[in-house]
Amino acid sequence: MSVSRPSALRRPPYAVPVGACAAVLLLTACGNTSGTAAPKDPAVRAGATATAGVAGPPAERARRRAAQAPHAPVVRPREIPALGPKTRAEIPASSKQVFVVTGDGYDSSLSTAVLYARDNPALGWLPVTTRWPAHNALNGWTDEHWEGDLRSPVGVYGLTYAGGLFDPPETAFPYDRNPAFVVSGEGFDGEPLEGSFDYVVAIDYNRTPGVTPLDHERPLGQERGGGIWIHVDHGGPTQGCISLPLDRMRELLSTLDPAKKPVVVMGDAEALER
Image (cartoon, rainbow, N blue to C red):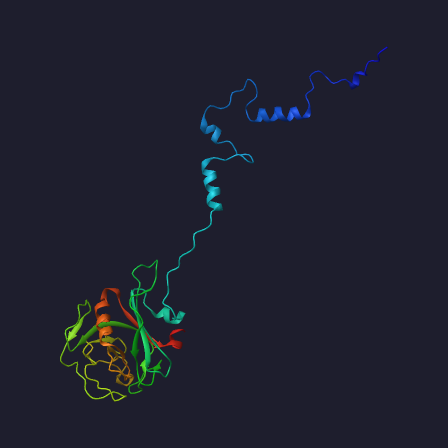
């Protein structure tokens, strides 16, 4: 004789297993249950929120790729090497050519010189020339130049006018060809000075900018010296000027551009690093 199960233990005919309920709910949420059509508009489907493992809309995917991509390096404009913040701050913002004369030491008469240009602000300062040998004053450099101290003045000065005994190389720079650019005698090492002023560029220390280098006006007074030029090297120290080999002097004249507001930055290496 069989014994029937208690009614409380019977599975109702409409009961659905728990796993199946989850499947039904998932199908319902996705809009794919029997008798319900999926949205036909692709834009509607694209607007649905992406679930884990499912690609989102194109804009969202692009945003994620951009966030994961490595950032491009930041390119900073190049600065002129070996110049400190104080020296750099003295260079006018309008200047696009800088002639840097760096002395070997405070008491040395030996220097080197490089011309830099800033034609593209995004790239910054780039060298236009190689490093040239140069001479400065016999006793070296000073932050406060006085007549007869035989030191070259440290600082940043304009370059606005040139001149010389001979016709210049092709140049856009204002140039005064004048027979007064003559010199004779001997330098401190016994070398002949003749030809030193064949080509000169006036340094705007204690002078009126934009006039011939032969102008004798001294705005700071005669006692503060003057007549500080870049001129042809005679093979030894100067009284206060900067001197370059003849070919380099011609190259400088042909490269300087008054439209670029050129300046000279000059001093011993330690002073320029300030």
